[in-house]
Image (cartoon, rainbow, N blue to C red; front, side, top):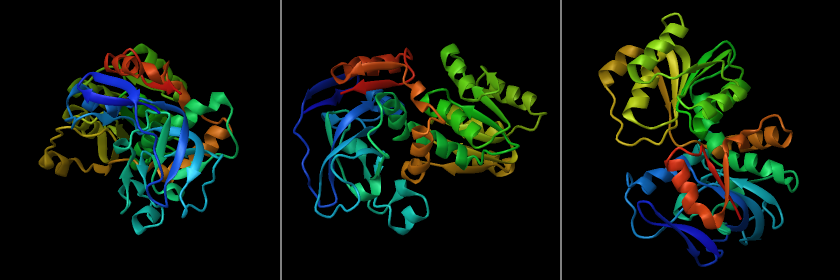
Amino acid sequence: MRGAVLYAPGDIRVEERDDPTILAPTDAIIRLSATCVCGSDLWPYRGVEAVDGPAPMGHEYVGIVEEVGSEVQHIKPGQFVVGSFWASDNTCEICQAGYQSSCVQRVLMGTIGTQAELARVPLADGTLVATPDIPPDDLIPSLLAASDVLGTGWFGAVAAEAGPGKTVAVVGDGAVGLLAVLAAKQLGAERIIAMSRHQPRQQLAVEYGATDIVEERGDQGVARIKELTGGLGAHSVVEAVGTTESMTQAIRSTRPGGHVGYVGVAHGVELSVEELFFSHVHLHGGPAPVRHFLPELIDLIWNRQINPGKVFDLSLPLEQAAEGYRAMNERRAIKTLLTI
């Protein structure tokens, strides 16, 4: 099969890889209908995360089941499925509490690589969710978004306790941040403030439900949020970047007693515990338990109540994955969809 491999920072190649096979009786093999490049893929692409030799890339995936292991009971060949970027058994106590991304048997799909024609999915019964039928082509981008960025933005909004009567601010205008805006709207937030400097992203944020746009960053951004909220700060803030600056901005933009949902993959983040202590701000986040939300998100997409697939503003064939990475790294694209 063909698949994307990262050899060194900036060096993505699409090359022949061995076809995946069933390694455990709980595995499934799927033929991907589409995959994509994630903002978190840019960390190793930029050299911020070390690359240990040639590494298969990708952790977002949808497609048709081709084969299942002998112990797979619920997922069947021929089904169209959506899976999380963490494989999970969905039965352990942690999964049952709604935190499948911390499953006792979890497997990070990025270690397998899904920017490819085929993929092995461990713990298939717990990881994969089948759609009601084979979806029409126009729904595939939205279903693919559910595999990570929609579920992550949704978790960020839930962790921030977005809901009716709340003012929600979103720090970060990548795909996760934009879909956190969509999630906050769906959860009934009264006011949604998107922090963005980029006009196309601002336009999509407004389409997804943003009522205000704040272009300032850092202390100026915090001051603007306070100005918009009577000096108090937002009830709920979603942090969708993963830097010290973005986390600090999120915490300082939140009113005492408010909630920050942080879902940006943290890199070198350092916080003042003393400042946090006196802020009275709740923090909750981490790797999103996408599997927890998948049935609800698939239903919303299937019934065309939401259209998260609009975050894909560049579509390329898998063979041009390197250009997809470059476009996102240079902020020429919000998110690149790779067709198979």
